[in-house]
Picture (tube, helix red, strand yellow):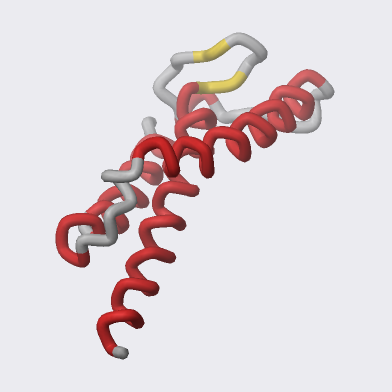
Length: 103
């Protein structure tokens, strides 16, 4: 139970330390982060909604919190499209920061 949420939490745990340790500044630029993540998340959420409505995609309720949003998406699926891009951006900026310090 709660496996999907645990995976998302693990992703955050593995990436969030980059912010204070390497001082990448991703979380300090909230507007820029939102402009980057939210439009892409919206497109993929619409894609998910269409796939669920067509019966091509489903979610195992035994792996979820049980909070379902309109259209049949679990809360974890919405969080996925926010957490994974955030982790990717943190990782990308961490690499850029480390490489810039080496120059």
